[in-house]
Amino acid sequence: MLNLDFEAEKQLGPELIGNEKLVWAGRPKKGIVFRAIDIFIIPFSAIWLGGFIWMTTSSNDFNSMPFRLFQIPFYAAGLFMLFGRFIWDSMMRANTVYGLTENRVIIKSGIFSTKTQSYYIKSIPQINIREKSEGRGTIELNKGGFLSGVGMRGNWEPPIPQLELIENARDVYNTILKLQHS
Image 1 (cartoon, rainbow, N blue to C red):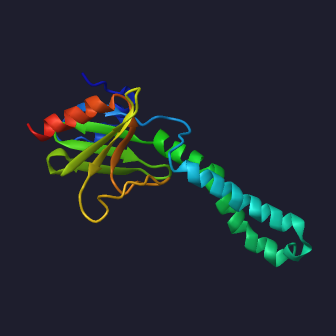
Image 2 (tube, rainbow, N blue to C red):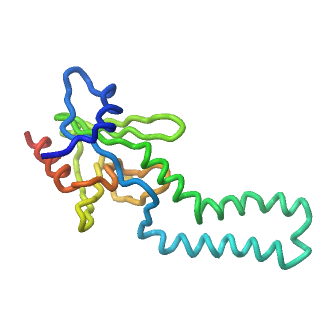
Image 3 (tube, one colour):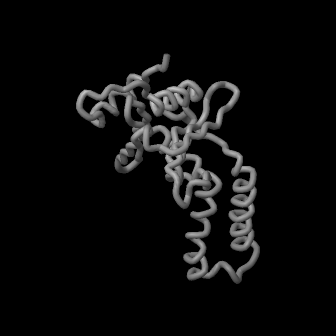
């Protein structure tokens, strides 16, 4: 039996059509999450930021006012890549809810404005699951098309819609499959 997250259910209520009912409602994992790509991005970001700090502190040639103004976007990019993207990603997941009805998968998210996406279960050509040992996982709702093989999660929106880092992912996945074939 799937659990209904009460707060997620309340947020998804206005999205239901007619007498549609939620079969499952949930949220992604909260807090800071490290991903496999971070093995490369964190050192690159540290080198990027360290290089600019070293340049501005080691030579008087780089201390003129025009050059300091030119450096601001590079410092901002380095700080975002090293720290800010984790905070942004955490805020995005904190403001995301997922719902599953008999007919649709609903994804509602956003920080400054709310975006609601709806996918009819029977029209999703491929569903993939990635699980961790504790039962948490990500379900990808592959729509097909040009980006169907690209699965890199950025800090804004993945190219493939997904129910990311949810509890009991296997149960939700199996429920979607049963609804597809009913």
